[in-house]
Length: 340
Ligand code: KG4
Ligand code: ZN
Picture (cartoon, rainbow, N blue to C red):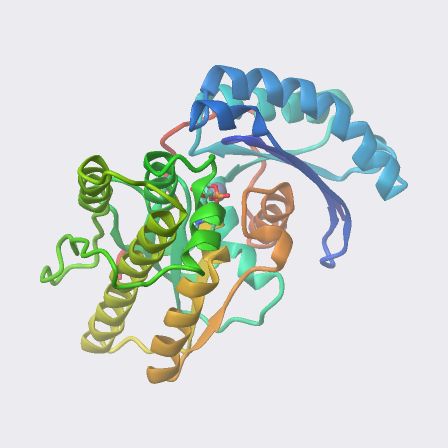
């Protein structure tokens, strides 16, 4: 079975052609770097760019795969959550192809794409714990099985990636901030600046990051010299604080599951922020202490990409989800939430 997928929920335009035996025939991801000068994604620019880029990379993907669009068995696209303009462009583009060729169209949830991405390259026993760290979301899920997700906690303000991007902007580093902060942090001292740990003593599994950004802003405003040394130390201190917050919540999640008598032997970390090596190595220690393996998606499925959307579609197809050409793109779409 051949699947064609499109991802356009934010500022990456991506198409992929996958066979259901996990063969990636072609996968193209285009980063829209034109947002960099604005310090964040401009939705109107993003949706116009998605349309232009899709028209270029779709024929290229088919040439690369050595097949024609007529060979595709099922079509899918991200239908939410995300920026409505981009979602409409991507989903309408794919729906038109499916309609013309009289083939099924599957709407795919972007978060489910991230959550299922580590099942592509790992054999995972369910239930498993999944930490979703992106530019728009910070959530902890218990995945009971494919299609059954329990949301255990999430951010009450900024998302973790968003806080990387905002702190980078305060320090005059270009968007997206995550990779820049990780680079600078390598040369800085992790305890140089004292930053707050919001909700440190709260016993739930929610996160809060906006107070750290405000603290960074205040320190920057009160400093005379913002040189490279300052930036390195601030990036290291900030990254370390974020990592501490994530570690603490994951430890709490283990305690919570233990109390509920739920045994997990695997934790997955997904989304763009999961690329961060410092965060990953600290989380790996906590998993080790809890006799759990820590897994990640394949390299090409960390950031936003269409291959994970195609893979999620294959999984949903296999559990008998029905196609739906009339599904409306929804910027606030959530994954099907189940009870514990
Ligand atoms: O999953 P993703 O590509 O898109 C969303 O669904 O939002 O995540 C993008 C986020 C951005 O905020 C970016 O700054 C962050 O991932 N990011 C990182 C790193 N690389 C990307 N954050 C921390 N460290 C990194 N190395
Ligand atoms: Zn994403």
